[in-house]
Each structure stands twice: as C-alpha cells, then as structure tokens.
Length: 444
Image 1 (cartoon, one colour):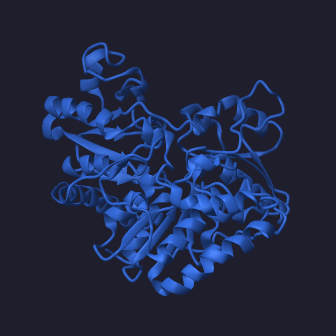
Image 2 (cartoon, rainbow, N blue to C red):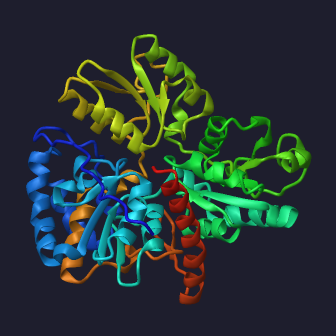
Image 3 (cartoon, one colour):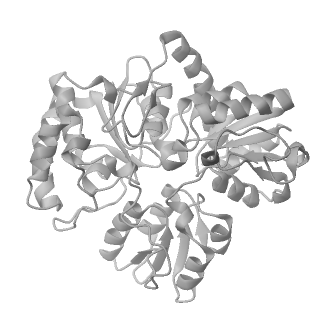
C-alpha cells in the first residue's frame, strides 16, 4: 500500500466549562471490570472538562507512560462527549471511518490500538492490522442502527439468491458500516468497501465492471450516490425493509417484481440510519429561507441532499466547520454529538452552527443528543480500558478480531475459528484494499 499522511488535528479547542453531551449510563450497563471506574465517574460533581479531565488523567497518563509509542488511540467524530471523542488530548486521532480504518495498517509500529467508536469500525481496523497488533474497543456494545438492520444472517441469504440468479454478473459494494462478514461478501464477488467520502468513486468503478451492483446496507447513501453519478434512478431498486422479516426474491419482493430486479443497475439493501432519516426537505427550506447554508451527510434521504447547499462525509462537514469565517451561519444535518461539538468550536470563532432538525416549530422532529448506540463509549469505558490494559487484565470481550459478531444488547459474541477467520480476512481485506486503491488513484 502507498503511505497515507498522518491524521491532522481536528482543530478543536477544549474550554473548561463546556458541558459534555453525554448521558450517564446506569451502573448495571457496565461490565463488572468497568464498574469501579463508572462509580468514580458518576460521583464527580459535574460533566465539564474541568472535572472530568483530571479524573481521566489518573488512568490515561499511566497507560500512556506504560505503552509509550506502542499505543494508538482512535475515535470517530460522532462519539458522544468531548473526552471520548477528543482522544487527541492523549495523542490519539479523531477522524472519519475511512481514515480510521487505515491507521493500524499504516502504522505497524503501533501494537495496541484502542478505539472509542463502534464495533464495525474497530473490526475494519482489525481486518487491515497485522498479527502483531491487537485492537480493543472501549465498549463492545457500541453499535450502529443501520448495521443492526444488515446483519450477516439477514443479508447473506438474500445475496445467495441474487448470486443464484445473476451468477458472476453480480458485484457487492459494502459500506464501511457493515461487519467483516459482509465486507468479505464484497471481496468474494469482486467488489469493494466504500465510505461516505468515496462512495461515488467506488460505485463509479463498479459500474465500469459492467456488473449488477448490490449496495449494502444504506439505501439512502446508495440512492444519493447513484443520483450524484447521474444514474437512471428507475434502475436503482430497493429491497424490502429487513425489519419486516426474511426476504424471498419473487415478484412481490420489490416494486415492479423480478422484471425490475433484472433490469436494475443497482440493488439497494433496505436499511438506513435512524439519525439521518429524521431530516426532511422542509428542514432544509426553513433554514435556507432565513439565510443559513445547509450541509448534510449523504445518509440523509435524497430529497434532503438535493435541497441542501452541500453534502459529504463527516470529514467534509468538519472541514467546512473549521474553514467557516466569522459571521457564517451553517445548519448541519448529521449526528447530534458532532453538531454540538461543531457549534462550540464555531462559537469560539464567531461562526453560528445549528442542528438541521432543531427548529423552534415543535412539529419538526429533533434528533436529541445524538446516536445513542454510538455514545455508549463514555469516559469510564476509556479510563477502564486503558487502566486494565496497563495492568494486563483487559476483558477478552473488548478484544476485536475480524469476523466477530457481537450482540449490541447483551454483548454476547460469536467468534470464528482460526480457519474461518483466515478466510474472512482474505476476502474482507481484498475488498478494503480495493477501496483504498480506487480512492488513492483518484488523488483523494
């Protein structure tokens, strides 16, 4: 692989009295090993950095000293609470899913990678990591609503039906928000992984292969990408909502029946992000009529993306925030924790930022504090993970290996045996490396 530049600082400046948008979890939500850290955290007088940082330092600093350059901390922009999200304080990196996935492979000197994000992101890191690197997640129950609607046991039976019908003419593009088991499906069918930052590049590449594309899992990103590329949307067919039960491909499965499926250029899995589907074109219109620039994430519905002034990944949105000039007014349609952190940073520079759904008219739905499953990573989990690793007693459930399937409610884990994992890594890595090749060939 070619080298990739180190992730740049997010540019975020912490102020002592900025409150942390983090809902305290009940004590019984924590693994037994993490409860002592949670009890201390819950006893703190408030949730400002002025209170939380000194407490977190007691565990993070000794771990940093113990591991030295062997340790890498990573987090995604969406993580709730400044402490978990802004691991930059401890020398870590905050980025979008594409950049995070590459960090272990591009930094082989880092032997212990601790991720404060969701399980599929940690697993993506593990797929590209070497055998000498271990990947740990601060909370194994941190998940993604979209990925929860695209589990392998939901998707693979449908993929088998599609392969039976179309054979080698079918190619799968797996969004990063999938398990390694679906990334392996992309690899086996000659496809690739994509992220919201490069979906247009990957789908454009897939179209040039002359094959029918199965896009898994986000129907909105898939449809928006097709629209961006000028595809005929009548040939972009969505499968049924997976919440309605097992999908059998027959004339009743999709609008237009099997004839529509046969004519489709791209078939969309029917899941979606619960955070981004609260947005509507009316939200966009309301803010634009009042002089605001509207920027949205492409997991939003097509009519929202078309109405907005701009659309892009979390990296795109954060870059827009950090490059905004005093007096600018941005309404951003994405996860709530991201927007709250963006608003605080904008305020310090004279830039007004609001959440797209936060309209005074209560007839509009608000997104609240942010993605509840992602924000299961909180300061006690970060403190406990680092301290337990330093002591040599980390819980095995927090270790992430390629192919792991973890129940977001119970943390029950299905782990592949060594042979199964080796096969999965071969196929999943192939699909991720193909994404990297496509992206870097485009110079992005």
